Image 1 (cartoon, rainbow, N blue to C red):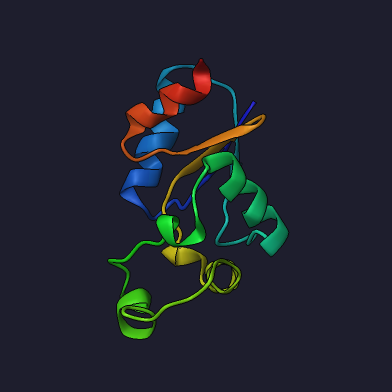
Image 2: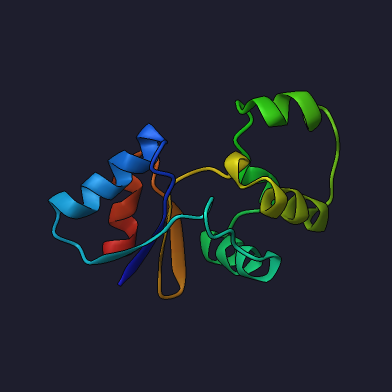
Length: 114
């Protein structure tokens, strides 16, 4: 089953969820703003995404622009920042077994179905 890390207020996240519904793909919703991921869980997701923490940062978010832009952080620091500020995590993230993708654009989700 696919897990979707979802923010109901986000248009892109809603599009990813709708994609799953349209394709009749079973899924579990994780509203990560209500139930934040731990540092350990985020490390696991990053490994499944095959990405560094800095690669999943939403650089257009006001918090990023005001507090983080232009600063250098190591991977562990980024993980801590992302866990403490989950709004700046790209979304939606979809996870299945040993893989994960960022579902923007929604066509990325197809990689989990292979």
